[in-house]
Image (cartoon, rainbow, N blue to C red):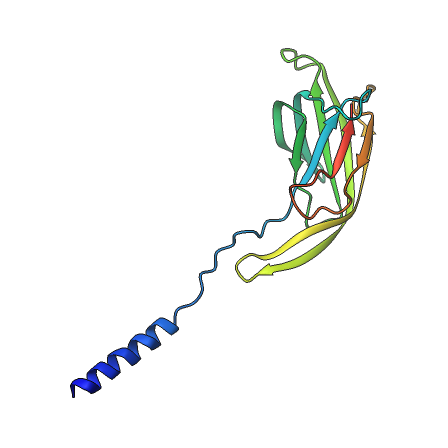
Length: 166
């Protein structure tokens, strides 16, 4: 009888342990952000901060704040996964104290989306391919002089995708 209890205990322990499932934790399943660096227009190898940078996302007729009043030489922006075009209004204040001297330019990115199945825990992520960008003027003074696509495939957050000369 004791042997039967020991065998049943071991057998039930094996069944209990083997019935556990693997944890569904998503570690590396994020859709990448568009990486942009700002460079000096006279020396295209020198990073240049944009003073009091403001970035707003445009969705149909609405504008949403993304980055507000910081001085940066590089930013990361989300691209839309439900469309093949994303538009941003990127502006700089010409002085830090006077917010009436804002210089706004609109930048539009066109791309193709590619959904990739990452894992059961993470689901799908989206990569962006054939990235193209254009700058349009929203006022009379264009502060972004040129846009250069460095990497047309946005598949991770470590590579710079776009250089903006200003």
